[in-house]
Length: 358
Image (tube, rainbow, N blue to C red; front, side):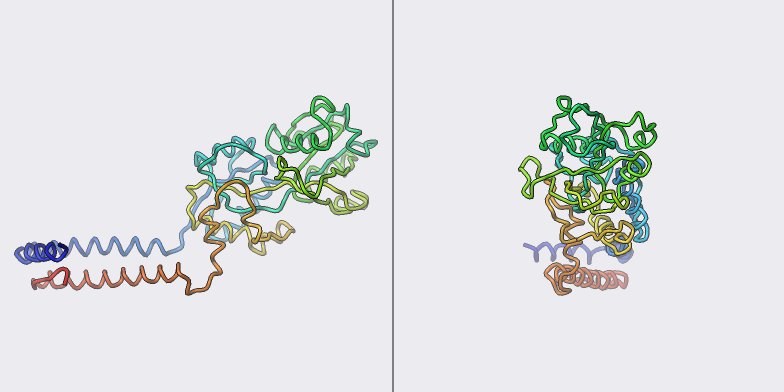
């Protein structure tokens, strides 16, 4: 059947006047030029712009977004930092592709089919900061405790951790959710008795409250094997003297909460790959003063892995891999087809008979 169609096409083409053959050849060459250009553009590096959710001015998320923005710019990737409120709204915007990226703490539930995991970040350390005279969690009963966020996931997680420790909000303590900037602006006598803050160390809020408001850190005990409902948390330690000689005086037991870099499924795989190159670069580690372990990139968040993350993980595969072989074969096939089409077009221009399918 294919040969019969080719024979019919040959007869029709060879009956055309010489001028029409030239027009047909010109059209073929234009189509070939467009296909070649598209093929080449797809292989060339290109600058992309991604929108990432920020956070409160002094928050860990805002700091991370700023550092990543500067590192990404070196790799021809522009990050536009947009205001963000709580994590649930951020995930909804991510799911609708109104933003492209966001750092989100674990523990959220909901259905977000268009959200993907680009990377897993090191856990954030939970700081429990208290006024002088308070030495342990049990002494927070009857006190005012700020949970470190504006009714977002961080404050929900802090509430759950205190509940697990035996302190229930509005029964054992009065909960509040003030922005970090507000806490830092309040007079000392207006501050709550305790503040729970999740951040990479050193926390800007913790440093301010300890050095400027005479707050102290207390332990937040947590089991080595967390209960399933708190699978986003793990036992961790706040290093001794992190905020001064006695702040804390010795390593302090606390909790690390999971943090993930999530992306919309509309984010181009190449842009995601470039972003991960920036995230795991030595200069980013120097900026954050911590080592980012790319072997932890796939630590589960509940979302599928993004295409850009898959490409990043496969970058160290052998050169002669099945994927690279398929790419080379595709390129070879394209070049052969291009050469064949150019030869046919040349014969048409010269008015010679052509034989398609031979």
